[in-house]
Length: 492
Image 1 (cartoon, rainbow, N blue to C red):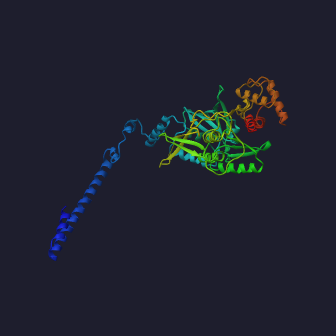
Image 2 (tube, rainbow, N blue to C red):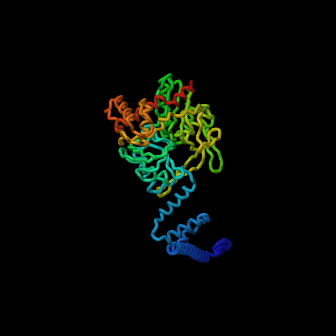
Image 3 (tube, rainbow, N blue to C red):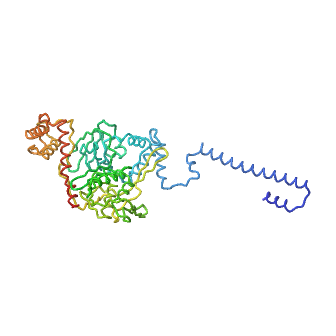
């Protein structure tokens, strides 16, 4: 106020020049004192704050931060452990454990936390030219299970199937383990082996499956022209180039005279949402709903088909229990918005959308942010999609993998012997009673198979004989695929 008053007085007083100079000196001195006072106050405040942070109670760090009462109990637990535990604790480990605990308490198999080290290893394993066994897995109720093996992968060749539970990896139990930790154990360099202890639904005892890791196929679309102008196109997953691959395959089949299309989404575990949207757009008329997303506030957003290239030929879609996530978005879109028939068995049932958040230290948290609904507003989570035409695969399609390194011979008795007898029977050989006992009839059936395939007729099942037997079983299944045949029938 004194400064302002002095300025006002100066304006209204008619004084001589010397008097004006004296007044100006007075104002300069007053201004200087004022600035110095402000500087001293700021300096003193900073010093007190620094002293409090350096030597005061740790809670001083909360100065200027709004207290969150819901974390009081968490802070208390942290302090008690940190101050009183009988040995030193890793503070980062405590914090990571707290985050892990929050995500685990949700009970959502698709929400997961990776600390800095886990995230780094996971990224390295992904970028190392896609080497591993090639299977999508999930965790539910403390158990890791197969969602779907990837086409052409070691997992598929080993006979792994959707809903197979993985109990152990190389003899180490993974019960209660997160998906991230399980993946890090299962993945590995090309050429190395991993043994999984598998519990298959409907089988009493677990079985050990040894798989040689390999480079996972990066192609996701496979096209083949069948009889009578029927094109079969399989999509094995939804990666960043799947839409382009599919468009190229459709154009190739069109050039070969495609009149009908069977789109195979069996054993497809899903993938990138944007690819599913682009592909759905090929099969759904412009303006029709593709799917809907409902956020945590209950707000629903509809995604509708746009114009552009469309598939005009009659189409049927194959699905099974390994068709999940993005596969189910595509299946429901074509079914409910364009009446394209679904053939096969009920799908997996994953109706949620996840978001990944990266922390500054390199750790990562993935969690569910919304649920997606079919065009008609159905939520298929943990229910799956029922096909229009239910067709099951033959029993021999469910048979387990037999390790070629393991020798099976006369007088042996096991579940593996029983699986071998079932394979021989499916291939037209007569192993006698299918009871898991390697008797003379089983030996004769193996000898018959070996002679038919120009192999040494030892009657012992091992090595090349085992590999050949499983290869022929896969070929037989492909040639006599009842789900594909039903789809062709529906299109007629």
